[in-house]
Length: 296
Image (cartoon, rainbow, N blue to C red; front, side, top):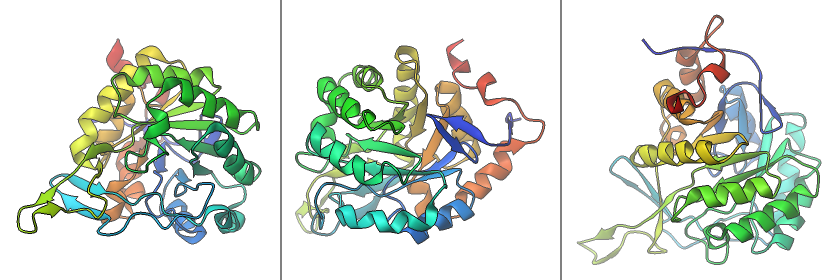
């Protein structure tokens, strides 16, 4: 029988959450209304779409293709930039985390400043694998991860850093985020991937290359969380292929203090409430008794 968790408010990465289940960036996070809907549907917190220093139309389509056990996407970080700030006005006081990106520590700090007094925390996207000059282009360099983190932490807002798995050693980047002052690490973003259509003799995505998410990457995410737990002392938020209470427990046992759910929401926007119904019980175990227990 699966263990149960005790329900109630949790405090992770200097943010109070209604539960351990968080909406990941890029899924139904493009408007304030969609974020509010996810909170009403049982998410303990929500992360916005990634917002950058300039308006961005994103990559040409097709931008998203379903593949075996996952989704391949190359959205290209489309966003309205600073105009998005107004979307968050109705969500004041809610556990909303703004995902932001930039091409330098200074750009990260500029974007962070737009949201600093409007959100519970900031999540630094240093991990998108298909946006030239952004995301993983910075996040694969531990020195740059540390500098971007430190630049945003100077604003006094809790900072979560979302790491890329597309590196030789993810723990080096996790340690860099911790040195920079991060309150939590989010692991992982999508893996570099592509598919080619034999009929069309060309890549299926308009950008040619993309990032793989969904069930296919869950074992990789578990390993990354496990390694980070061994090397970092700040909380880890597991992300990648989670779609059930069993997945949540496995990720927590690897070392995650909470989880983010993304691709699974595409097929079932009510997944947070469904997982919570199976995961929580008034007499369940305290999360601290389960987090990292696979290391013992």
